[in-house]
Image 1 (cartoon, rainbow, N blue to C red):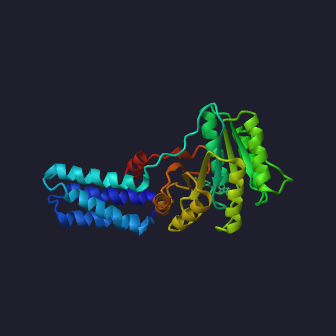
Image 2: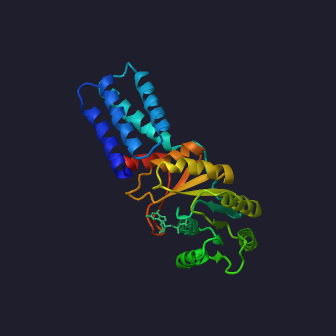
Image 3: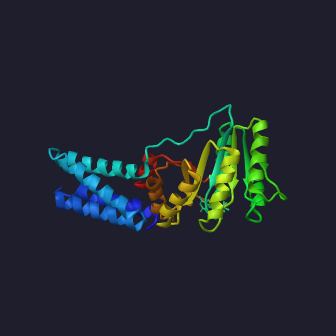
Length: 296
Ligand code: GDP
């Protein structure tokens, strides 16, 4: 089930109970069953769904003295709060600081949307007055530098890369050193991906990380990959210890639930979501506004 339908189904379940004359345990169970089925169909991890169900039940039953319209409001609020908790790991992501160099390294599998997202993030900071540059440390995929160069040129963002150097660690270091010397405030390093999680990719990420010493490592995760998101993000977390996540392809047709589960699996905050191929299809992520929007 895609995200847009997930919101509609959850809303439907809440609306049924708020319209019903009797709000007893049976009605609450029916509502919870519908909400949980919808979450599972959107690929949210079953353990998280079971936990959400229990927490909602416990909270509603602990307030036995609340009845009538107040009970309906309590149910609405509890469901909302628990959906927010599902995407909120309560951990603050690194926030770049003005007048100093902030190195941001991107990691993720090939095709996740890393290069596109690097340009989106660079544009985001450039528009907010940060002196921003991009470094292409992907020497693995032919054409990677050309793609970054094209994107950066279009967005008018200074970039660094090499057509001749094959060692990604050297390119990353040269680019970051150059931009550091020139007092850039945001330096975004795009690393290479592979089609699968492979040891040599992880080794390369660790070496680049050691060479450029990032203030923030961001994992780019394809919002459409479903249940695979959990294992993938755990493997990357072990290797690269990223501090935040950007979910891409969260446009209307994504299931998204698998990627949302990655937050809990790695206890890492989502900082932005990509909602299309265009450079401005990019939103800051806040758990409350995401759930408000999902529920329309
Ligand atoms: P990389 O291999 O991880 O660097 O991935 P790319 O940046 O080359 O992106 C792979 C494909 O995903 C491209 O066709 C992008 O246009 C597309 N893409 C990236 N982000 C989004 C997004 O948020 N929404 C959609 N619909 N497509 C995206």
